[in-house]
Image 1 (cartoon, rainbow, N blue to C red):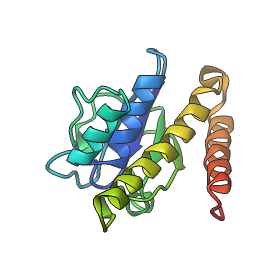
Image 2 (cartoon, one colour; image 1 turned 30 degrees about the horizontal axis):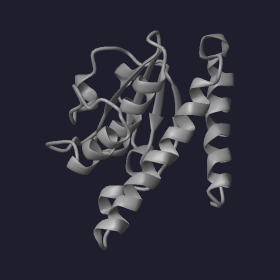
Image 3 (cartoon, rainbow, N blue to C red; image 1 turned 60 degrees about the vertical axis):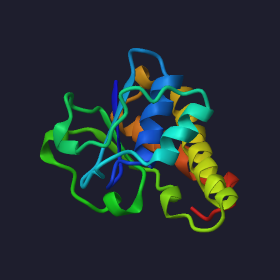
Image 4 (cartoon, helix red, strand yellow; image 1 turned 60 degrees about the horizontal axis):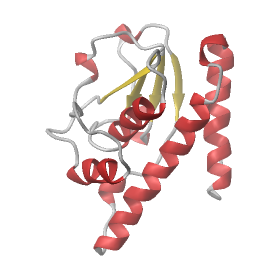
Length: 164
């Protein structure tokens, strides 16, 4: 299964998701990330946080959804900006879900507050991805997979004390 994590800039949240999924996942399932308007580079704090968590940053770069080398089976948007955009036709009939999480690169304040924002976003995505990888991904129909992924997002929001 090929999973695509989308975020407008592809510099933080979708990069986190790609790296975490590939770090935790089995080799038959692969994640990629992309953006509708990719940044010129990955946010340096994203790379620092991934390395701090023991996750390889090798090969991670900000890229356009136009530059994908495979057709995704699942497309997960992780920011509110891209959630409303029409996905390109080449993405085909992929299962599409939205896991909106806060953008830590917009955090303001002291170093500790900014680091806490990056940690929170990382943890939120890791929770969702761990739950996703616990599913029998190969055995679910597209509708069942879509429902399961939406339930994962809603469950994590409830645990975080947010209203779904």
